[in-house]
Image (tube, rainbow, N blue to C red; front, side, top):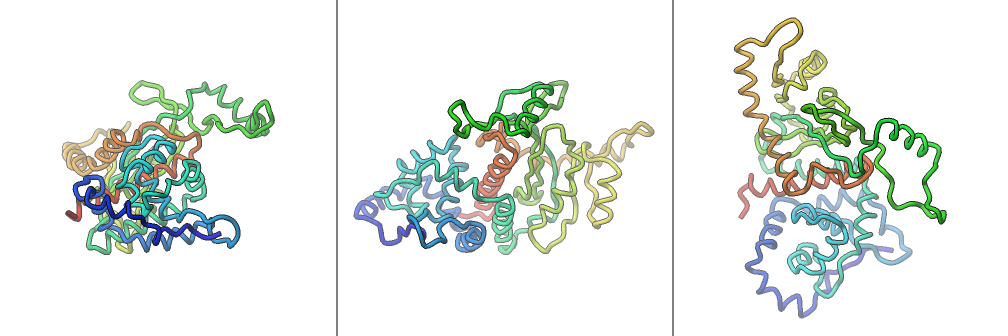
Length: 353
């Protein structure tokens, strides 16, 4: 087994449609993205984590960089499912050109996308996203001088279960019950048992929570992590800080809302010589001063950049609802969104035409 090679497979049809693509907005967008990223470096790193295709036996596999680009197309063009992604690639000339796939060659099967996604680890995606952000830094952008942290609720992909139902289902899964259907075959759908309940604004919510950090200078998404919805925002500030370090440049300041206020985070920031940009709130022993009120307003003007990411991903990628029924799969989906978002952002920040 090796990788499919399409470099010498272009037909007369590929040449004939070249003229028709000159005014394609989709292709222009993808050409702009090609100008902000070195795909060869991304591919070299990807190959370190992807074993499929390295064996000499079996049929040739699709190149992993092509499959990565397919999943980025899914994010950029708001394609809701893998079967729809397969159809779109077969139907759109601009997609095939971006992927390096000749017109007379079919798209990878939708199951190939699913297998590719499942074969990449969180570590691999963190490294890939770090490579992309590092490339931006090498072009002169300061990507982590100041970061803003926040969290949002994400609806579960499964219908809500009561706490008692969740406990019973988790116990059954631990015993290995319900892993097969009535015919003894492995079940294709497994209910989400990693979500849980929380209350926000007096409304109950069943699902997950996405914790993120965003660069306040350019709006790049630096880190993303999913947890059960009941997890408190505050405890993830240290993780987001460490996960945002994509260059040798130190983080100078962290901005956060009142949910991150408290002694543990103040001590963490002081210990790491990071300026405290966390909003203050009233405590049981003292109310915030007029100065702290003004300070909170100044911090909120920096924190808006996180809300911008939440809003865009909510609008274009249904970021408010989980696609899958496990935290691992949903985390990887968030990391693909992170890469797609940052590449699109870089086109604007760098002024690529």
